[in-house]
Length: 132
Image 1: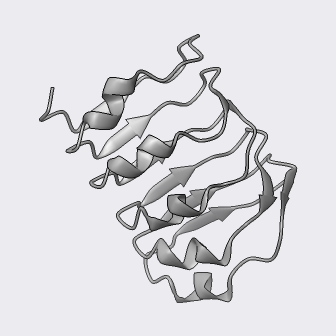
Image 2: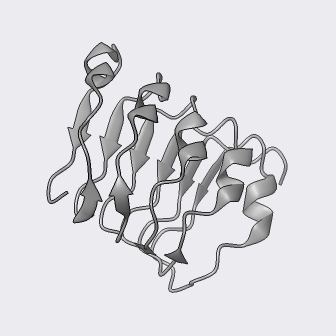
Image 3: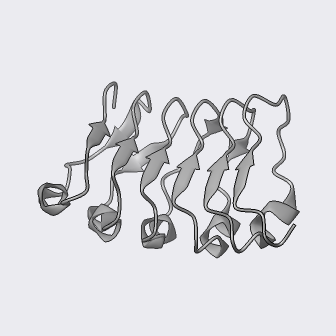
């Protein structure tokens, strides 16, 4: 499975992310939406350095967005909507230089100002912060 580039495990009634997922170093597309994942966003996601599409929406993540998360510079699509994320949206968002779509909507406990650097992202096509 080391050559796997796409993994869609969306809509599964599981609440534990299998550890082997984080060893898929060639993974480009990961959809873990619509599960029952709880707690913080798994730190091991930072090991997926080729990741371009990450969908974690409709889970039960209830932490802040970790600072290391903003260093996944290859990300083009990011959805963290419909979780229970909290804390400040970091200015480190500017590090996601390849980003085309960001969806943080329906995380009512997120706060803070959006970075002015978002306006400099030439690839950015869609931003959703509704109900934040």
